[in-house]
Image 1 (cartoon, rainbow, N blue to C red):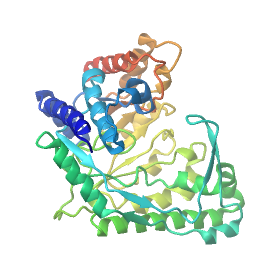
Image 2 (cartoon, one colour):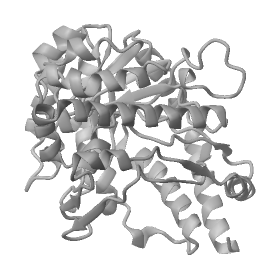
Image 3 (cartoon, one colour):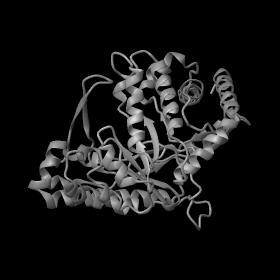
Length: 407
């Protein structure tokens, strides 16, 4: 990494450290600890630009030349931008995470994707065309490059100096749901029909994915590659992991799955009955999430018809309430015993115009219905602001005003 890139990164890291030292960070941190412990407080507000970062921080903003330096620069700039413009309840910590450098094999097949354009739609060539193809499946294998991981950790420590504390910390998965994997392998329409035409075959497929995923968790746990996610770590489909309940008792430095937040979802089963959801999805997810100390469930799928099934997950703490969820049923089912992780429809930020009054009414309606619940309001799945970055900042300000009103 050349001297110019180092200087750019050090300047940005110093700014992050300056932000992290502000008194507001301690207040936000305690807000999260209370929130995740179901102890009350104002509804949490988060806003994730996600695909919209292309408009907020285009590549032309980046100054570094080295590929790794550009990735680190982008991460630092995102933190600074969030603090200076978005003003949600995200905590800025004086840390910089370096992930394990690794590769992971496939499940025995490469899945061919056919794209229309870089950011457009795509189809894929699902490889499990015949029922007999299931015999060709193989468990995935992780290859952890310990040397390269150590090199990047040392480089980060050298570059950031005393500004930020460098740590090796990452998660190798987002969801343990497995449904997207099954659908990539079999195809969405085929898998829907398999529930009726080939139920025993589909059960065999899901059992295979469950056992393969469990083997991956075993490998990562025994190898000492897992990281805690109990601080400023994104958990579930939105929210941060601040909790004093993790790691679990008996923790001696090497992270176990029971020291972590777990997460599963079944977005692709959105139109499936609760009975079929339990039979072909949930029963295979349950042994995986049971291993974790605290759990989150759900993403974009409406869960109001499945609450009684999902609530069987041990130590379930956070449940996603998507834009398509019946808020009244969800509020009644969750009460004050779970985090009501509300996701407003991001389309309001992507339309021809941004309507302030409509955004406020949506938020007030949710919080009125969810009175007594432990609510977090999370704007995510944003992919464009129509070239008007102020929209997200304006929405966050509205959300914070409404949240304070219902504190």
